[in-house]
Amino acid sequence: MTGLPELVLTLSCPDRRGIVHAVARMLDEHQGNILDSQQFRDPATETFFMRVHFALEGEPTHESVGAAVAGLAGEWGMQVRLYDLAVLPRILILVSRLGHCLNDLLYRWRTGWLAAEVVGVASNREDHRELAASYRLPYHSLPGREATLEERDRALLQLVDEASVETVVLARYMQLLGSGACAALAERAINIHHSFLPSFRGADPYRQAHDRGVKLIGATAHYVSEQLDEGPSSSKRLPASTTRMGRASSRASGATSSASRWPAPCAGTWSGGSSSTAHGRSSSADVTLL
Image 1 (tube, helix red, strand yellow):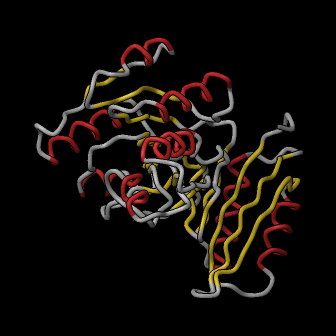
Image 2 (cartoon, helix red, strand yellow; image 1 turned 30 degrees about the horizontal axis):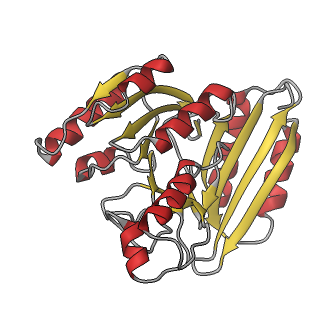
């Protein structure tokens, strides 16, 4: 970090010449120093994507930069988001029986490696209450399979609202989310799935992979959608597998991979043209400051 206010701008728009120049000029006019910039063009849709991390070196405020970004968006037909890196996203972690992903996330959070504010742990089981308590985090009970899908969604969304949660992380949470929760948490819920998606969706992917003689296993972090394990991927890890590895060994290797598959806490990153989002704070009428 520079010690100066740092922001991240993400944008997408129809591709044409001059976009990078226009963004850089706007930032320079508002005394923004570009620290990192990434961009690409999707040839299938002829859409241009860009992520710019910059520091404000002068007098301009977040609001004035937001207004300038809104003007640029209107001129170029852009979808834009502006993130304030000083504002940590409020995260709720969901977990079921297996706690290796939860344990890894909490350790990263405690040591400062996870740039987020974990506001609690929620589960349909009691297995990890003591672990959450050791981090001085509230542990919330969610309905299990005895409840209807609508009842489970309602309980989760009530918790999300009460705790002002911005991002929900499903860290081996083995309960389905219904259409109501998927819609309310669109682009705000990330699932850590214990296989290299799109292969081996659903339950027990290690058995599926082992039975087919697959030599590559892994873990995938992806956005939650109504279609099981089919949301856009944000991060993957792919350890090798050999014929000497049985199901137990594959499961252990996959657990290690999935525990570390929370995507790097870098605001506004995307994969495959799908930008990440979160609830935000408004910096202007047209630009959401996140």
